[in-house]
Length: 327
Ligand code: ADP
Ligand code: MG
Image (cartoon, rainbow, N blue to C red; front, top):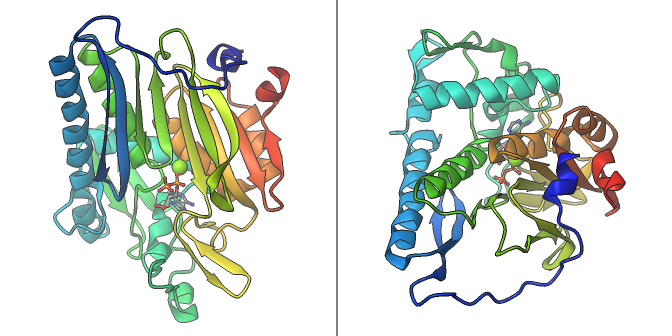
């Protein structure tokens, strides 16, 4: 089982690691990019080379943000949203790859993951406590539907066959960016590192023979961890209903939308997914959040090499089969 090799059990304390030569160091830095905090931590045998590798990751993250931020009118994504319902639009290689992956997860989840959720979610403003009016919801009924996103991989074009569609890659782009960051570090000769963008992280190697210990946040207390897990060479993404939300009485309006209802998905509080790549853990954490415990675990249990930890609406923990077997 892949996750048994991924989960190096028994080590729950972070050890301070000291440099073995005068120039080898742990480097760590965080920057605000992609609407979240991007953190890079790495072991560098040579400090200047490590610094260069780290800066390369931040530069790449900023480039991706610039292309894929739907709120920036100059981004490639914003241009697509303006034009793709009029005629097929030529898109970049990397958007072909990301949208293709997004559509794959839409098909796999029968629409629980759907980048056209933005057709309705663009009327939310979580900071201002604003949600779509009933009139807006009615006008957008049926607009969230990935089947109307026509990707031609060979021609590298995108066409929306429903004029009301807007897309947003917020459920998958940070994972992609984290994978790009790890690939860059590996190219710079780094063998031990972690790259995180908000709730999406990927670990390269281990921490000098020991696992990295990742905390899964308690969904209702930001100062607590619900769980701490030792990991090496894997990606982990967490989706939670506490990231962007506002309360209206007892109803929590948050940023993960159930495409079938166009309202925030109500069943669970947090989902963490483990996979080899962060693009997969990111998309699947959002997907499983929408599907809820039983459908979500059924999906994860059919995917080799992928695991999930769900905290349900009552705060109870549920794990995919392979994680339970590795206890
Ligand atoms: P974040 O790391 O930003 O908290 P998550 O992985 O938890 O992201 O996913 C939530 C984000 O995914 C939302 O902010 C939104 O951009 C996007 N999203 C929300 N609902 C869906 C959905 N049903 N399908 C695809 N993407 C979604
Ligand atoms: Mg996600």
